[in-house]
Length: 340
Length: 222
Image 1 (cartoon, rainbow over the protein chains, first blue to last red):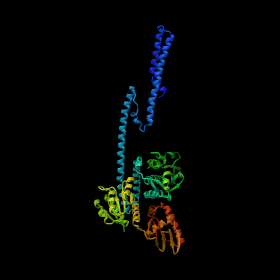
Image 2 (cartoon, helix red, strand yellow):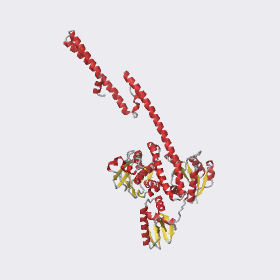
Image 3 (tube, rainbow over the protein chains, first blue to last red):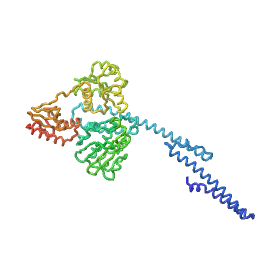
Image 4 (cartoon, chains in turn brown, blue):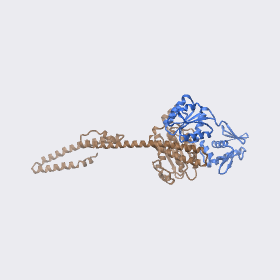
């Protein structure tokens, strides 16, 4: 609340008082009162009003200041009506009641939406687990049936599997904390698992991969890590140049932690788009020209990295390469444990 | 021959698994009555594949029940991929845990790893492979011919190892590449040709020519 705002609000009262003083003074002068007396009365009136207005202004300012502070402190600001202190003013009481009713409706709505969202998420997760069954069946059947077409089907199946996986991790991405096991994980193993999983897809896209991780280990959850790496590798494959592509994956141990870089020799990212590749729904000019881009993959990667305490960054030169780097910060507590 | 017991309620998957494992040279027993699993265990399987979500039964409790009387290795198979399940799989006595949709090759690799670990069984027992007088030494990654030897890189060794396993037949290029990917060598078609050329020049230095034949557009044969 500002002084200007307060004065504007009270303008009619001020005008009324002004006119009152003026009319009274004129009347008193007309009935031949002493000028000094009239001036004294006018000044007294104004003074009394001024003091009252100042006190009123301070009290209002204090009152709203407290509410403002409450709003900032509260983790859910829409619950503020529960905390506002009682006021003797009728207007305050009425507004408080209105606020209470309106917020109650909001809370109920939020609760209902949360409930619906939870149900929907559970349905999606359940559905994904259902759909994994036929995928397994087809995969086994393909493997058991030596046929030229099996390979193509396996490739399409890998694409389907990856899409399903993306949906599952998207549904779970808000509740990562419920579902991870942090343990010492070999990077070589994680990378190898991802590559084997996408074997048919990668081979048929004429990709080759050089892996240089030696025995580097990190403390992380292998399942989430595999998903993140999978998204990065699939991107590298999607945005390869004509013909094949070479991806090199290597790990570097530094003072601040362990760096895992995935570098491809693909079409690269235009300068102006680099900052936005991790944004949700961002497909960029590459995505539009190649189609099949949802703008979800890298967004999910960043989101999951945040939750797992990793840093993800990208470097690229158009027409030359793209390099995605994951940084596993060195955790002093865990390293101490490890060193004994 | 190792005997594997499949405990899986989905009939189609059970059948496909049976075919897969039989093709891979295992003896397979299936069970459809999950209340008598303990009886099946008395058949002495060398390994059990156990699904977690059986209609009326729970894989974990079956595992606990089996563990009371037997130490047979158990691999859990599940459609759910939550960390809680994974933990429970190990705490209830499982030896490994694999999620659907698994790759058949990965499943076979896990099975053979668990068997190796628990029985000390070594399915590829021989240390050296011999073909047409040429010896491939698995311990030292060396090619030996008439007392002379040549060292091989990891990639070259794995490639030759596969050809030795399928000697006498034309091995399609894609088969080779896929085998190499399964064995942590992630190369493409061009690199395969480069590797074969390198092996040929090493063979020539040993005095062996025409060891690896090329079937144009198909693959290689030794």
